[in-house]
Every structure is written in C-alpha cells, then in structure tokens.
Length: 119
Picture 1 (cartoon, rainbow, N blue to C red):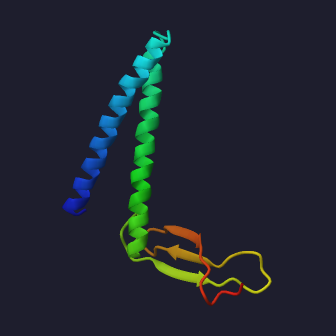
Picture 2: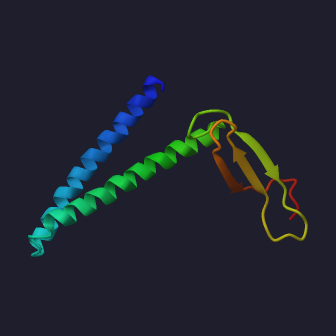
Picture 3: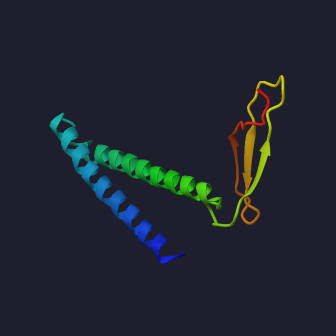
C-alpha cells in the first residue's frame, strides 16, 4: 500500500472517531434533557455507530468511484476488463457495461447506452 493510501485511511479514521464521539455526546445530552437518563448512553452509542457507519460508507463509495474512473479494481487495484453490451432494437432494457477484475473476481454491471446503441 502506498504511503498516501495510509494517510488517507488515517484521515478517514480520525474523521470517523471525532464525528462519532461528538454525536455520542450530542445524543446522550439530548436524551438526558428529554428525560431518558437511563437510556441516554445507549442512545448516544446508537447515534455514534450510525454516524460512523455512514461516514465509512461515504468514504468507501468515494474510493470505489475514483478507482472505477481510473479503470482500476476498487479491491485490489488491478486493471478492469470492460465489456459493453449494446441495447437492441425493440428491447426494453438499456445497454450495459460489465466491469470484471481478473485477479480478485470483482464484478460490477452498470447501465450504459452509447451512441451506437439502438433507441
């Protein structure tokens, strides 16, 4: 893994920890103010976990999108094999783009209608 990738992982990790901690405190305080003193820590944990998972998925989606734009596999970084299937006349579906990684079996299918696809 390149050093820049470690730095990016560290930055995302720090963001997740700080945001989760802040939302834990916020969730706990709001619950306590509403009269749920006994449940306040549990509510804070639930909110913190929800925020952490949301930020992690957001960062993962960004990573995947950047890798796919470069033509690299989001999992292992190898080059992706692309195959476009054109939409046929009279068919109700769009054309599709199939992306496959020969190294780690990553596979993704996206709708893609090009200029040569029948409309």
